[in-house]
Length: 339
Image (cartoon, rainbow, N blue to C red; front, side):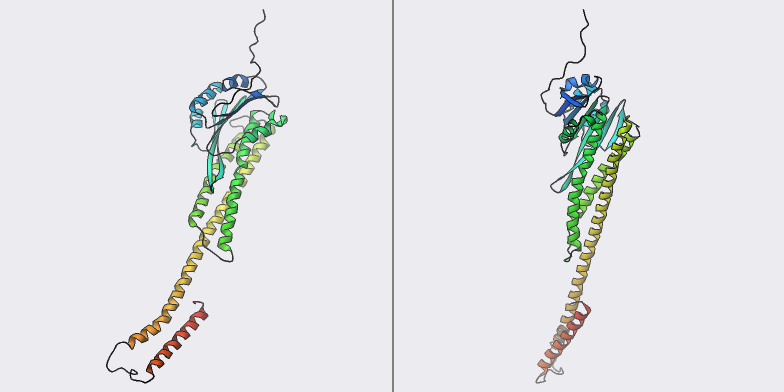
């Protein structure tokens, strides 16, 4: 009697479960079917097949179920369960564990999330935490092209990293638009002071974005040099392209931070100039008002024998003298720009 066929049966579309965005098996550049988590391991071991699993804020139990399918390292699972990891690339046996930071604008502030990626022979698992754009568009784009999908899990890794970096652009554009408004407000025809607190918050958000983006460039550099994962040489230009995009992001961030710094300094200088102008005006008016005050004080001392107090037109002479001196001082201060 013939021995029974031990190969996995044809995959059956699996019903979605909590925390699982998608779990599919691919072969020959096409999607074969969606599979249950418990079936992903055996399909990943099939020659010419690979499994792509997308998780969204999974429970620890779900991560352990995925771990049992691909023999993932305990430390990597522990990191993936926590949403406060720094961008990095670590190797655990034949698998690579990558942490990338995502960013998007929420109520005028940059909200950061995380994506954890497990990459190994025949499988790639993405774990999303916090604010992040869905990778559904990445999956659809890859599934629509058999040529790129036939490159396997390493191309999926590139596609996700490229998508994360591309999503930094709308964030930078939103901040760039606000910075332009600040420049118009500070350096426009009617110079005005800006919200210093808002300037500080923007600079701090840009620094956090810089700290999130730059380590991803180091990850791509390591992937290009096959220090951790052996990448097909034909795909190395793709990871170089991601590195180039990150460098451009860094340049944009540095440029925006400098503009905000200049805007902050200009705002302070404008404020100081306004205070100086007000002080000059107050000083000029105080000098003008000091004249009638001094004269009125002298003639209000009520001594019995005071010159001019008995003159018939003395009152009018004093008023005229005060008016003449005040007008002269006003004209002098006006010419000097103090009034």
